Amino acid sequence: MELPINAPITCTDGAGGHSTAIILNPVSERITHLVVREPGLLGIERMIPIELVTASTPEQIQLHCTKGELAQMSPFISNHYLPPAAGFVGVYGAGIMLWPFMSDQSQTQFNRENVSVDELTIHRGAHVHATDGHIGEVEEFLVNPTNSSITHLVLREGHLWNKQDVTIPITEIDHMEDNRIFLTLNKQQIEALPARAIAKQVG
Image (cartoon, helix red, strand yellow):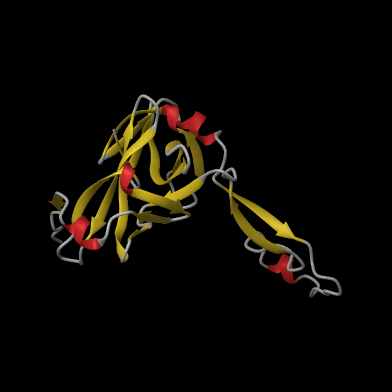
């Protein structure tokens, strides 16, 4: 099963947004969640258990849930606030004048991904490194549908007008970090792997 990142999502009752990332356990090499951004300008990113993916192609991912059920799933990003530093004096009314577009200036807001300590988030376009340097970006993963384990990484390499996809077995991944994947192969070895040219888009 191909699991693309940045693909349209279809729920049982209609369009559910698009995928923006995957969450995986780098030790077991198993995908645990798909991150889906709901439709609309202010659509929230939500964490969808991988078990809800019923079918997937490069053009579409189908989920076994309704749009309403998707909207009740855990958000991928949560907002947190730090208390003001000792001695901080805010300007009266400054945080109220632009409400709701800003919070109290006496607090500092930061965002955090809601993933467990043993999981990583991989976004489309995450950097892939050969043993001798950067080689391309993550396009998608190939997944065993019976246990959600990753079998291959699809690497997109090349320049603007000469890009191609190269499928790399999971056994050639040395290790993964947030948004970075390191391979056991060098660039020459990767260039020797079978590749599929990407059709140029016109217009």
